[in-house]
Length: 246
Image (cartoon, rainbow, N blue to C red):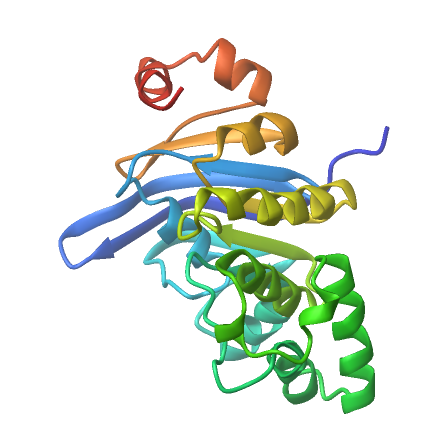
């Protein structure tokens, strides 16, 4: 077996919103190819924490290292990290006036400086990969929520990231559309993509995660394999949380 290689190292991360101490010394290491699911009640700091990984949120104390690059105020470091880290949000954030194909090719053309034909070729491959190739020339408003979220995943993948962050990617979807998005994420995980996922989807966490992490009140409470996390949690706070969601 190869030794695990850390690709995200967060050490003693603190963040304040004014006087509100939202992250209170959170440390987490994610290895290359690992799928880590963050769970916890609303307001526990999960989304804020993963948003620090690509500088969408600043942190005031601690250290974050993304694939050997220290996340600092240096814009060159931030840009380098954002090229390696794709992110999918709760809301799809697609440009309504651009077609699906144009939404996906925009960043590779402008940021990676790809030729349009090269970007479009990759975009079509990605649309096939997420199961909506036939939607390439439609506009976001013509798609279902599940289809729009799959476009958002394809758009993030178009930058060929090493890490994918998912911030509650199914919480804005109707229940019947959740599965199609989770299936795409399952496939990504099976292909070895490093993923950090904030979600309440217990089935996904049980099946796909290498580790499940509970956050509460700005603290990392427990981190364990799904088998242990869901059946033999060590912390009372974890047991209480699971009693409310299972």
